[in-house]
Every structure is written in C-alpha cells, then in structure tokens.
Amino acid sequence: MRVGSFVLAARFPGQGPGEALHRAVRSAEVADEAGLDTVWLAEHHFVPYGTCPSAITLAALLLGRTRRVRVGTAVSVLPTAHPVAVGEQAALLHVTSGGRFTLGVGRGGPWVDLEVFGTGLGAYERGFPESLDLLLRWLREPSVAASGERYRFREVPVVPRPSESLTEAPGPEVVVACTSPASVRLAAERGLPMLLGMHIGDEEKAEMVGLWRRHARAAGRSGEEITGAGHVSAGVCQLADRRTDAVETLLKAMPGWLKQGLDAHVTVDGRPRAMRDPFAYTELLCGLHPVGTPRLAADRLAATAERTGISRFALLTEGSGDLDATEENLRRLGAEVLPQLR
Image 1 (spheres, rainbow, N blue to C red):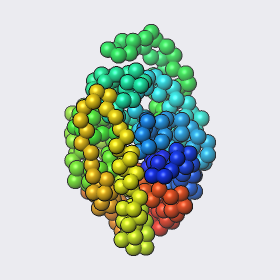
Image 2: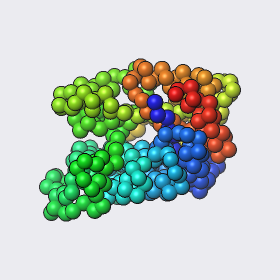
Image 3: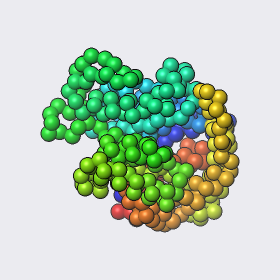
Image 4: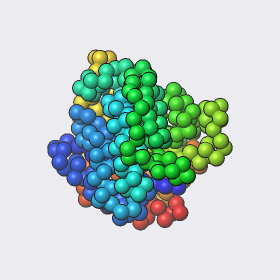
C-alpha cells in the first residue's frame, strides 16, 4: 500500500494566494521527510478552491525541493492545453528527476477556462480521447505526426525522449481521473490506472474498478496489467487523539473554503450548476475517509484497500487551513499511521 498527500493549495477565507501556495510547498517538503510515497498536485484556474494554475510547474519546483518522494499531477487538465506541450514537460520532468514524476490527466469541467485558453467547449465534450491518445504517443514513440479532428501536424521528433531504448520503461506513468463510465472505459482500453475522487465511497469505487477490469479484459489487456494497475483513491485525512477533535477541525475550516471556492466556478456556456451544501459535504468526507485517531485511519485505509482493490491513496491533509496543523497532520500520518499499514 502506498500513501501520499493530495495538495490543492486551497485558499481558506481570510488567506491570500501566497499563503496557500507556501503551505502547499512546505507540506510537500514535510511529506518527503515523513516517508509518504507521493505528493499529488491539483490544478485550477481563476478560483480560490485551488490556487495552483499549473500542476506541472509546481511539480518541477517540488521535485527540486525533495529527494525521495514521487510527485504527480492530479490532474493536468488536457482540454485547456496542447497534449504535445504537456508531453514535452512530462518527459522533461521524468528524465531530470530520475523517474520520480507521475502525470495525472483529466477532462476537467465545462468552465470558463475553455474560453480563456481558446480551446472551446468541444475540447471538453468531444476532444479528450484524441488529446489523451496524442499525449500517449508522444511519451512512447521516437517521432509523432497527427491527423485527427483537432490536431494536425507533420512528423516531428520527440525531444527529449522519456526513454532512450525499447528496453527501458516507456516514460512517466500516466494516470487518468475517472468520474463516469465513459472515462473508466477510456482508461481501461489504454491500460491506464484511474484516479478516483474523494466524493465517492468504497462501494462506488469498487464498482468502477470492476468496470475498468471488464473493459481492460475486453480490450485484450493482460492479467498482469489488470492486477497491477495501481489505481489511486483520493480522500481526506485529519488525525487527532480523539475522532471528535479531528472532525471538529475540519467542520470549522472546510465549509468556508468549499463555499467560496466552489461558488467561484463559472461555466463557459451558462449552464446551471448543482452545488453541494458545504457543511454536509464536509460531514460526508469525514464519514468516508481516515478522519480520527491514527488507529482508525489505518483501519479505514486498510478496509478501503480490501473492499476496492485500490493500493494507492492521495489524502488531503490541509483541511485545517493552517500550516502548522498541516505539518503536524503529515508527520503523524508518517509516524503513526504508515507503520500500521506496513
């Protein structure tokens, strides 16, 4: 089992973006020191829900600041970026970090980002499979040409190449954020592990893993590929000597952040949005994830792994909104929870 932190660089009420980003960088350094496996970085535009607009850029900084921990994007949003540019950056980080970089990609949402970056609603509604396939080709082949609906260009060499020979690993691992049966099938047919969100519980995650396996078999994926896929489960972790104290910490801080952050999302085409109640959502997250004592947290993670078959976790540890509390949370996760899982 591999446990990592999920860093949103969340801007809580009364905080500026500099404070949120400083907490994000420092928490990654502490995760490295505490023995966590991976630091996963979220990407958002124009909203205080997350103040990191480029997960790959922040990953580059953190790979330079750390020595052991893997760093991954969760996720880089493909519909607002050219897949070749993403592939070049991923290859660069893979080579220069000694293979410590993981590229998580996703479809994102129908946000105003599509207007600002000029990619349009079609990139979100229809273009993700084409972008993903072009990205994978860039990470696996020595030269690439494109003749698709969205991307057309002559053959060009891949520089830098993620690997220099066919016997080496084919470049950075690619993980796909999945929130629908269509995205599960897309990931499965390409043999890519899934990143599953914190808003769903073990039962739904187990169903998605089962669906992924069925599609992977139908696509001719080997048994080894299927059993070793390494899906990732996102969640929340807050530790305290009593569960009531851990829950209270999150209920005091997270609803205000969730309300101002989620309210700031603007759709590109004016479509209506269904908003979660921030307090009820925080309560839901406390019930689904390792929030409580270290013993409870270890039991909850082990139970999720057993029920779902998922072996990797990306846990939001900054739910208090406070840097010192986040550092303590990470250190306790490393010192008091991880040994129980190993």
